[in-house]
Length: 213
Image 1 (cartoon, rainbow, N blue to C red):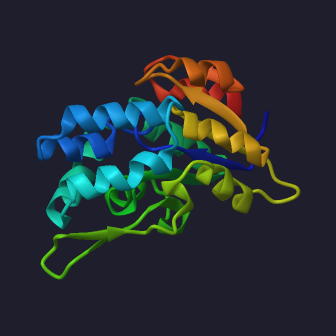
Image 2: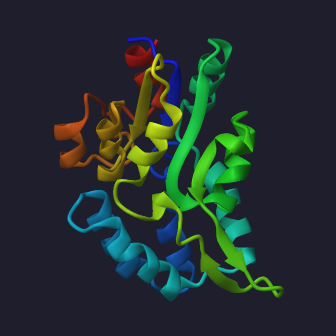
Image 3: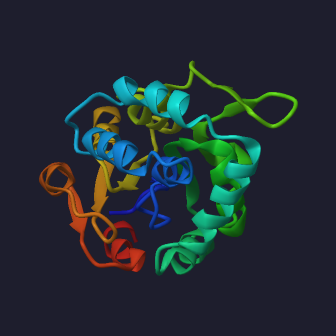
């Protein structure tokens, strides 16, 4: 198929890490947070049931967000730069849609040539001393169905959209009329294998190109 708009999840899709779990590990809450994240990504609990809980426990400060931004780039999935270069050269409109923290994802997006206005993620807010204050509780990406909302906004009546991701929240894009490619190169989830229109289990993201060009 030939798509006008191509959207990517970030965690375990563009980068090998789950950002919130890495932040949790820094404050000694790694195992507990990893269980919550996995439950949400497998569709066992609603995202909004764990989102606020995770951030209120971790309380990530500005320094930890900058550290995470570097880690996203350091742990980039194989083939990502090639995929973005190929799609950009083909004139595709590229977006990142993530339930992760927007400030941590923006530097990775810049590396891939994606403008800030095409990065859809959850902003967090800091106090003047850089300590954690809150997150954007109005963001659709902090709740279930949020990715479908963003895809709906991006889809035009003539356009076609594909969403690439590793979790149950990415499968929700189908509600907006998007085609979904499940990427299991980092984490292989049964629910994604079952629900995705196409599924790629290879460790390199290059494997998705066969389905979108």
